[in-house]
Amino acid sequence: MKAKFLKVRCTGCGNEQSVYSHASTIVRCNVCEKTLATPTGGKAEMKGIVIGAVEQSG
Image 1 (tube, one colour):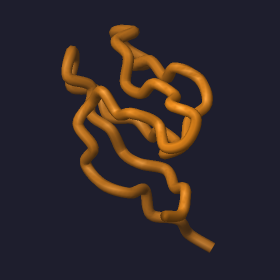
Image 2 (cartoon, rainbow, N blue to C red; image 1 turned 135 degrees about the horizontal axis):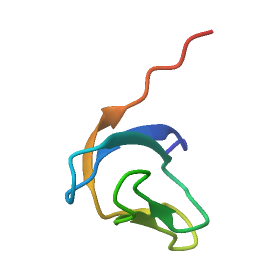
Image 3 (cartoon, one colour; image 1 turned 45 degrees about the horizontal axis):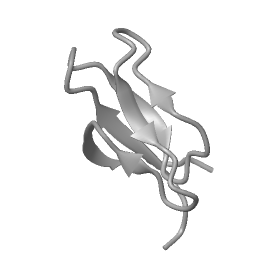
Image 4 (cartoon, helix red, strand yellow; image 1 turned 120 degrees about the vertical axis):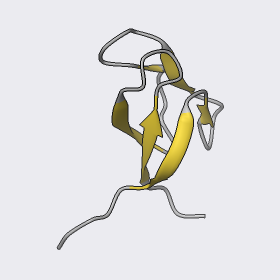
């Protein structure tokens, strides 16, 4: 599977932000600091609600 950016909704505050599918560091919500994704050595484990992939233009 190709790596891509995903739109993830925080379960704490409802904020939506883009998260890399293969994140190598812990990703936290920009609003409430709740963990959205944790690294696993490959595909990151998403802790928030994945809404879908971010559309790329170009």
